[in-house]
Length: 173
Image 1 (cartoon, rainbow, N blue to C red):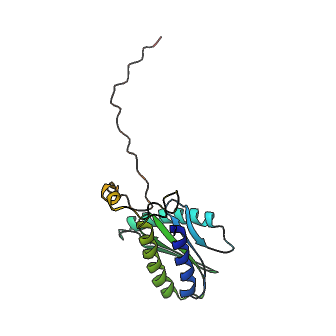
Image 2 (tube, rainbow, N blue to C red; image 1 turned 90 degrees about the horizontal axis):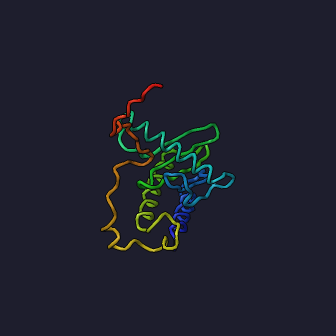
Image 3 (cartoon, rainbow, N blue to C red; image 1 turned 30 degrees about the horizontal axis):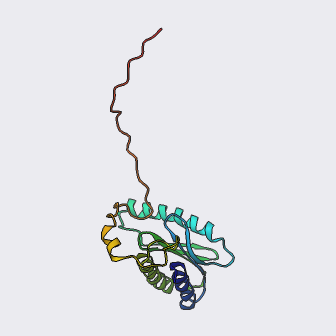
């Protein structure tokens, strides 16, 4: 079974566990849709906005010295948008009505984020490519290079350096 199918099954089970949940989306931290159950919403746009919000949320937790990003909750006049980390490569975004039980939303969102992270960790890729539905071979796990140490939602920073050569003096005419 492909990873998208497994993730979509998890999203559908979420709808039965959380009354007043109106939609759910799993995406990569780069904003690519893995699976979605969001009627009346464009999933690609929501995934892109989730990635942007994730970057800001990570920077906020870092600037406030609050540790690694875990979740983000936004409340509008019509309900909630909650985003949960799903490992280091994916996020789970939930849409809920205004009268949702927020405690239940957090509880189930955190659990589903962990399940989605497990599903993605046992597969070769995030559900794309011709071998994505195969488990990761044990010998491949031993050869995976170590993580770069960059948490989710961060961008590499380029530090300007001095040139290695001296500029030639220009002669005036």
